[in-house]
Length: 97
Image (tube, rainbow, N blue to C red):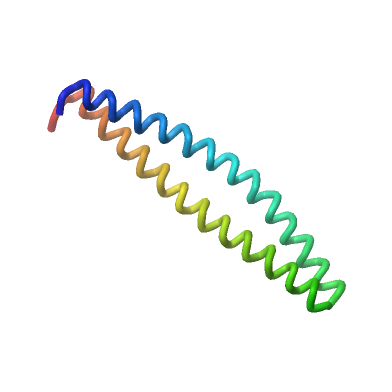
């Protein structure tokens, strides 16, 4: 692969990695808030013992679960981008293998 192609792909991978890390930071902040809400609704459901309070807690718990799945997928994407970036750097420094 030509050096310019490797450099272009490396730049693209880096930009995608920066965006993904920013998204992960934002998702972590949102997850902390949603987790706190889920904890509050759990306590409310325990104290109130009403179907409405239980439904509210169930909904908040589902949101937490969905966000955790999204976070896991994003973390895996970041790992893949880091691996790809490393491979491209190796190609740039060492040359085609």
